[in-house]
Image (cartoon, rainbow, N blue to C red; front, side, top):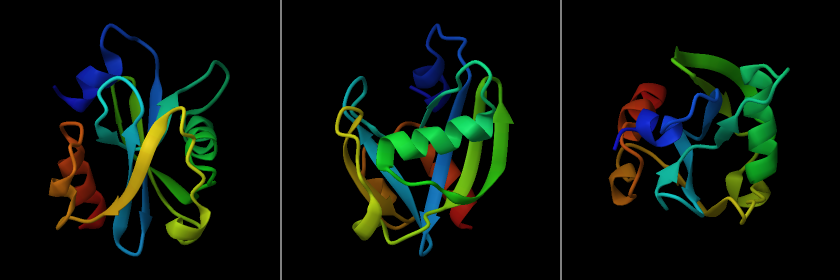
Length: 130
């Protein structure tokens, strides 16, 4: 199943996702429900909220971190991708919301294949890290 299908299965809501980097690695999160696959921080954009505001809010809610140097990576249909930097060492500052995610990892192109990721993530990680 493709990333877009998982996010928008009969769903017209707008979503913002964030690819956070630190030391040439990318943060991925394991979902607590639904697919139990690994994905990126993010979620629905609320009424009156910009995609960037939603991306920041979702990072704060899901991992307790406000990303820095956030920039738009891509917009496709109802999905807006951002790339940003982790403002601190993930080992020291991630405060995972266990209601949404059960685990987190920092990955690069060598070890991302060890994780059961949502289809399409490899391409995104490769684009961000290249």
